[in-house]
Length: 114
Image 1 (tube, rainbow, N blue to C red):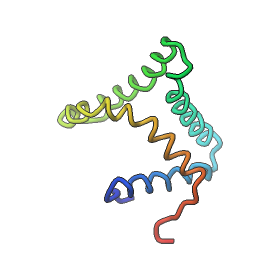
Image 2 (image 1 turned 90 degrees about the horizontal axis):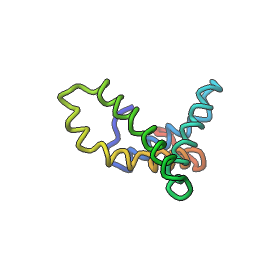
Image 3 (image 1 turned 135 degrees about the vertical axis):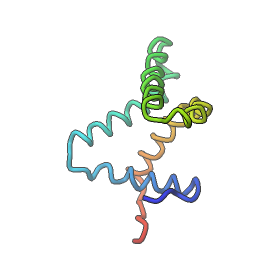
Image 4 (image 1 turned 90 degrees about the vertical axis):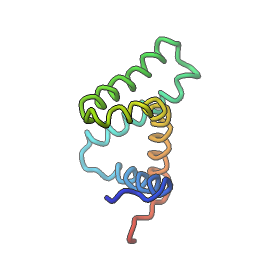
């Protein structure tokens, strides 16, 4: 797919993609998607009910793999720029995933060209 022209286009594109999630024939892929969604919902809700050690563990379960992925997959020349926005990206990622997945599952989706 071509990159979205603006933030609203980006959101709509991701909602369309999320809407397809329930149509995948592989049960394992569907279960993985549900587990990821539940993880992000719990991560957002954790500050209101989880004891501090559990909250810290959940946050580390999110941040450490993301940092490892960044260091393994991003060339050194681009890493510094991404690291400068890493924390804001981490803060926004969970609400973004929950919003897009929920919208994709519940809202009627208009496909481009249809």
